Length: 432
Image (tube, rainbow, N blue to C red; front, side, top):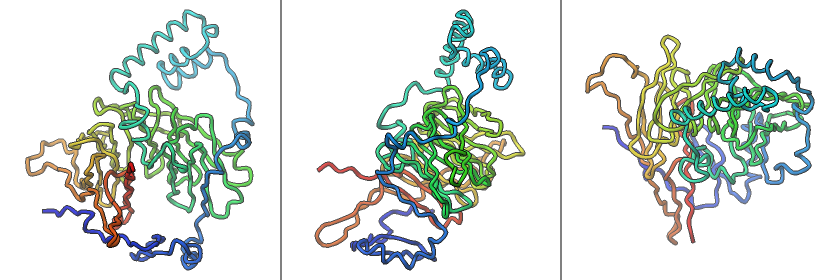
C-alpha cells in the first residue's frame, strides 16, 4: 500500500528572519533579510548569466508611455473590396468565416439584403454553438471566473500577472498589470516592451521551443503570437499575429508542443480545445460534448499525451501519438475541478483539485491506457492519492506564533529530473 504523505512530515519553517535564497546541490541556503544585499554576494557566480529583473508599480503604463510607437503604427493597411475579402476568406477559411465577415460589415457595403441574410445565419450558428459547445456567460468573480481559473495568485490585483522562462536560454518574459510584456535578457541594451490593441487581460504566456524569439500570449480576444526582435529598435521591429476563432474567448491557457510545431489554447467559455498551426494561421478544434468550458491544457514532456481540464469535475487525457488518430480518455475527480496538473518522468501525471482539503493524485501513463480491448477488473487504472495538502499550523515559538501551510493549490511544477515538485498555495485571507 502506498503511503500518503502529509505536510506534517516536513520540517517546521525557521522562526528567524531568514529568506530562502538558493537550492544548491540539494542544500537549501538562507540569508538574513536585513542584510540580504551583502549576504547574496557569494551566490553572484550562479546568477552571472541571468538578467536583472525589477518590477515596480512606477513602471506601469502612464499617459506618456502609452504614446510610444509600435510596429502596427508604421505600416498602412491595404483595403480590398468587401466582395474580394469575402471570396478570399471563403477560399482560405471556409463558408462560416465568410458569413461572419459579411455579418460584421456595413449593410451598405454588401447591400442590405445580403447583410440581413448573413446576420441571420450568424445568429443561427452562434445559437448552435452556445447550445452544444459554449458556456453562456462567465462569472465576473468567484468560482469559474477568469481570476479563479488562471494560475496566478490574486491575478486581478497582482503587479506581475504571469511570467515565462525561455526553455533554452536565460530569457524571461513578464506580464505586468497593465497588460504589457517586458522581455528581460542578459546583456540586452534595452528592455523590449510589447503592447498590442488586442493584448487585454493576459492570463498566460509561453515561449516557443526551438525558436528563440516567439512568444504565445493568451488574451481576452484570442491568442497573440509575438515575433520579438532584441536590440535598440526592438519595439519597432517586433510584431504579433492575432489568432481567433468564433466563440473561443477569453483564452486563459496557451501551450506549445515540446517540438514547437503546434500550439494549444483553451477558454472557460468554450468546450473546444483549439490546436493551432501558427505558420498557416489555422486552428483545428477538438470537440468533446460535456465537461463545460476548458481551463487549461498541458503537454507531456515527450509530446505524446495532452491533458485538458474542464471547469467541472471532468478532465481528459489525449493520446497524440503519430501512429494513431488523436483520441481522448475521460476521467473525473470526486469534487470540484482539476486546479493544477503537470507531467513528470515516465509519463507520470500529477494533479490536484480545487477543493479543500486538497490532495495530489498520481496517474501513471507509461503503459497504454487507450487500448481498444476491454480491460479486466485487475487492469483498470486508477489515480492514486499521493500527498495530503490539508492546512497545517507550524508553531514558531513558545509565544503561540505559528505559520500556516497548505490548502488550495494555485500552481504546481515538476522539474524534468523528477526530484523536486514546486507548489504554490492560495493565501489565507483573515478577517480581523
